[in-house]
Length: 76
Image (cartoon, rainbow, N blue to C red):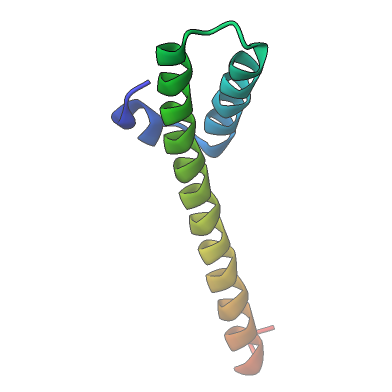
C-alpha cells in the first residue's frame, strides 16, 4: 500500500491493516523481502494512526477549552 493510499485511510482502517500486517509477519512464512516491505508499510501505518490520534486529541482539547471559556462567560 502506497503512502497516498495510507493517508486516505481512517484511523480504524489503518489500525485494521496494521493488525493484518502483524499477523502476516508473525507467520514466519514470508521471504526477507516480503517481510521488509510489510514492515515498512507497518511503520507508515503506525505513523499515520499516531497522527490521526494526535489530531483527535487536539480537537477534543480545543472543544474542552471552548466549553470552559463559555462556562466562564456564563453561557452554560
